[in-house]
Amino acid sequence: MVLLVVWGLAYGGVPVCSQASFITAAPHAPEAATVVFTSSFQATFALGAFLGGRVVDAFSVSTVMICGGLTALLMAVSLWVLGTSR
Image (cartoon, rainbow, N blue to C red):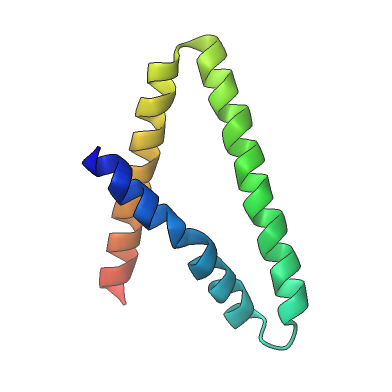
């Protein structure tokens, strides 16, 4: 339950941080940045659903959960390493 709450709180900030990052990268075209943000966000949902479905078909739902956890751990470590190198 604790991990679920932590994940929910952390994931709630992803759209806000991502959109701020896109708009910061293109301050002269905030509308275009919003379109690119929306497209990329939807593409990640589609890719995640596709890959998750393929893993379920080949293995099991438990394997998808393990892969998701490992991906989250990999991203957390990557962000930590990138954050400390600045």
